[in-house]
Length: 226
Image 1 (cartoon, one colour):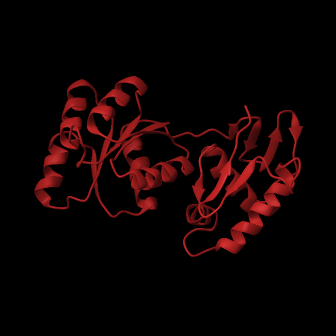
Image 2 (cartoon, one colour):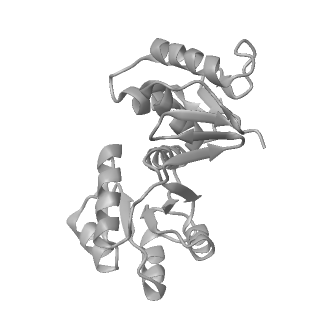
């Protein structure tokens, strides 16, 4: 399931990407309106999450252009909260309109509801892979190539899931805590201990980790071997 995120706020685009990837979506990102049209034509996403205030070509123009060619579901995500703005966006063909700031859980729920209304199935794979690692989500089982690694606990599986979905990207500590424990459910010490336990099962040498790497002052990254 492929989603195109269009937002010129790089930090917010990262948050949106993280939110949708952890919900099981493949994510494509564009930071201006012209790039959005190019990515839409090249990558044919199943859904578009579209900001209105964009450089080069504004979001309403992007929405209008797409609607002349296809019925790809579009969710507008904007700080514009006036009724006229919402009505105009929907009149131009957007399927939903969410006002910033937003709840990540609400966004995922609205995305899934829109896809159901559009008759697009939201079935996600039972396993994930990055490099030579494969994670079986239903059995909490991890393999490196043909080698079965020690079974994962539910928390370890949740952490490995989000790392694999975002392989070769640095994930901020707070985002990881929110994914594993939920808001206010964990802290940095708990995450550090969970990473340590996961490394004992994943790393050939846990004292010199090469797969789950710490990025000081930021978070963690899963480095996927080719």
